[in-house]
Image 1 (cartoon, rainbow, N blue to C red):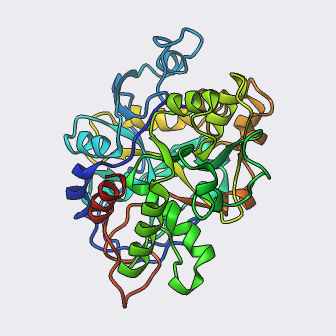
Image 2: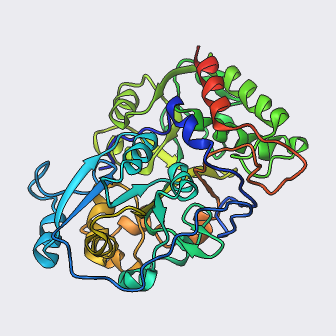
Image 3: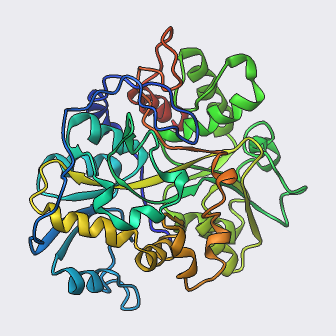
Length: 399
């Protein structure tokens, strides 16, 4: 099951200053990085003998060695095969991941799109030689060379998996079945007090995505690239929604409980939450609304200061190998990165449920990206609102 993760906190603001500029980036990713100019680091051309250990920073559920559940272990086989002892540090936020990688004590990190560009821009993440990761060849094309894991055609990591933020509703209490985010915005009053929303400043992007479809006069192209007028409209939409929200959630267990009890009947969710809630008796359905959605894509990146680079590369290859990637995708609750993983999942419907190879589906997902002053939609005649202001606005919205 997917384990709890948070997004950036206000402390992340200092890291955002490292992003000097960024250019055109569409919702699904084009590999274009515009004005982002990271330090001139080189990827290795070959690897030496394994160093005997590897130090990792990861989301909970990504590096399982059987200690949490004896049946869930893809670390022990890796250690036996490679001779690389895994030392893993679980991080709760992207900001924590960035801070830990700056220490130089860790060899690799499972960075989300709201952290990866900061690591690239600061020189904490090194380019990756994908030819030294044989299993990269079988990674879905839709995950390669995207704006959150590459710069000007240079790869900075190996894709791990992806997921979408969906609209979940109680099938017995929300009728007719909604197909639009209007259910939690313009029509939220119909379920006042029982609407739920993701508890993070990045949720402003969900409001912006809805306004992109419903208020075309605002000219929103990218929900993470908002000028002041677009940003203010998104804030106002969330302030209007706030009086109808019963609970903001960041812990998936709380959302499952709220839908089971009836305290929540409609709101943002993840596919794995819908699966778990349904398994526990809740009458729920999760859909990708017609406006599209926001989502996440995680990337394994190697530290520019890695003390165990050979073991780090062996880990990158292992975690996207068909079997291991299938195991982590099922346990965590996401679409795997390796196309061959779909034949290895215990649940043979997993890849269909999570739309693993459905690129038409992912084209509708706007993956998390850190908002910066240089507009990510390519505009040069406007200044966009940076994440620090998103944090301030989010506190005001909830307050």
